[in-house]
Amino acid sequence: MNALITGSARGIGAAIAIKLAEDGYNIILNDISEKAFENNDLPEKIKALGVECYVKIADVSNYEQCEKLVSEIKQLGTIDVLVNNAGITRDNLLARMTEADYDLVINVNQKSVFNLTKLIGNVMLRQKSGNIVNVTSVAGIYGNAGQFNYSASKGALIAMTKTTAKELGSRGIRCNAVAPGFIRTPMTDKLTPEQQAEMLKAIALKRYGEVEDVANAVAFLVSKNAGYITGQIIEISGGLSM
Ligand SMILES: NC(=O)c1ccc[n+]([C@@H]2O[C@H](COP(=O)([O-])OP(=O)(O)OC[C@H]3O[C@@H](n4cnc5c(N)ncnc54)[C@H](O)[C@@H]3O)[C@@H](O)[C@H]2O)c1
Image (cartoon, rainbow, N blue to C red; front, side, top):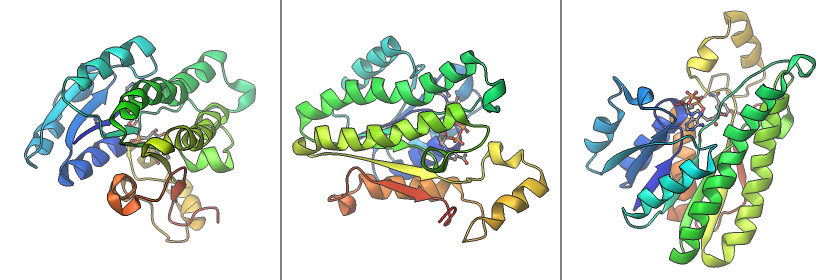
């Protein structure tokens, strides 16, 4: 069983890769540059779990690079799991947001999901099996000031998740999404103590999420235990914004 996790050199993607390796999947790590894997022991950590691990460099917003990526992965056998995790932010108030930052975020966060769902969806259709998980965000559900581009891209992923589930469901392929809230990563570590305290007030569980909280939910969604779940958006937010 092979699983591709995009943008998985670090952060949430890396945690998902480790969790799926623990569950016995061979892992295809992806990131945008070789540099992301320099001084990075993730491939060794994964191999130490007794599965295969491959590193594939590709900019997932680029259709041609995705075609090359998918043709290489097809050589490994079946493609059982696709986790569309790669994502970026270029935050600014709408009045100050540049067209370039709007286009970049839409391309990386949203077009990448078109690219790989189309290409790998076709492989899964032939296999008559497969699981896709999209990593969206609470910003895609509720919106967020300063994140017009990011919220738009993540909102689109929710519609894409449901559409994929409807198009591919009859062939036994499931597609779901996780919508993380505030997960402790270098991104959220940058916030001031005051900003962090303010955010915690809105979280029912009164703690930030950890990358493993997201990884555990993804592992459940691709497992047989979630065999009758498709087209769903699972918030991993500690009860934010209820
Ligand atoms: N951290 C959070 O609190 C949080 C909350 C909600 C949603 N998310 C989502 O979770 C996902 C992972 O976030 P993270 O916090 O781990 O971020 P991160 O920045 O730590 O990791 C993202 C990875 O994606 C890679 N990447 C960026 N552009 C790429 C491209 N074009 N092609 C291939 N790889 C690319 C980056 O190099 C990086 O390694 C993103 O989609 C993000 O929007 C994160």
